[in-house]
Image 1 (spheres, rainbow, N blue to C red):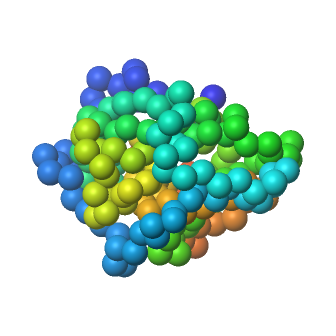
Image 2: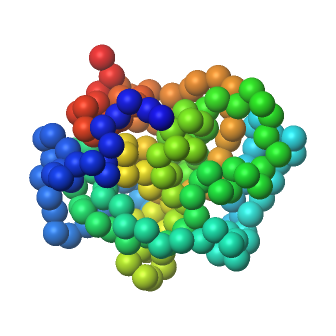
Length: 195
């Protein structure tokens, strides 16, 4: 397991430097992209073959779950107990014939945004691929129809408008990481910016 502080053991769910919000603000690097009618989630890179999953494919998986997660923005606000419906990344990964040398994952969005996480973090820390927010379709301003969320990292490690998942053997920086944000992004350690 990673060495970040366990969220389950925290009585205070607000990480240091965060303020609780009642509403769920929206922040993006640009405008909301158009969602293709024939959208399919592409998985590529260090795999035996590229795979594509439609939204219907994802929704019909046996592993679909509904889960509450806290959402921590690097700008200093947190929204607690957001209900998401989707699948765990680790369950999708079991369906992908990947190569043994995979160590990192790059998530790609329709608007060109990218973010990276070590494979170990993706598998162990409850990264979700979601399509419902509070029982309704995830609205475009919150990254719908499909996005990722990961409670144990600042929100820029979750990606709106998910289009592709790239499995990699080498580490690469994503959009905000290239611009000086922390690669690890642990809110309990206030890892907001790279040193």
